[in-house]
Each structure stands twice: as C-alpha cells, then as structure tokens.
Length: 93
Image (cartoon, rainbow, N blue to C red):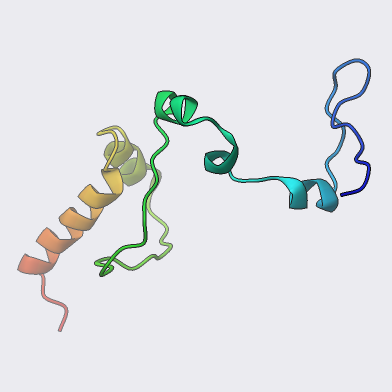
C-alpha cells in the first residue's frame, strides 16, 4: 500500500475524506477488540434462515410515527401488529 495522507491536519481538524479514504475503511467488527465490541453492545447477526417480513417504505402521519416511536424499541413491529389486527376486521377483497 502506498503512502496515505493523514486524516487530520496540525490543528486536529479532520480533512474532507476522499473515495480512496473510504475504500480503506473497515467494518468496526473487524478492527475493534472483542472487549470493546461487547461494551458497545455490538452483536453479530447472521442472515435470516427464512425471512418472515419484506422491506418496504411507506409514508405515515407524524401523529402515527410519534405515537409508535414513543413506545420504544420495536415500534415498527407494533405497527405491523396493528395493521394485522386491522386486516382481521377489515378484509381487503
């Protein structure tokens, strides 16, 4: 590997990163010690054996988003559950 330019200047300011800089970056799990990964709560997760959900993008009103997000982690799963419950009483076909 050739000579690389430092990421910071004499004052400690980070310079603008180039595409070449980004290519040199590695995932945190490859470079951080296991003890620090554990402290940070980093978990390795493998691929799903049989995906049960599909990724999508939808637009929701701010009221719906804030209400579900206010319930904490898992809010997307709760939206999924609410839609399933709605479908039980409101069939689409």
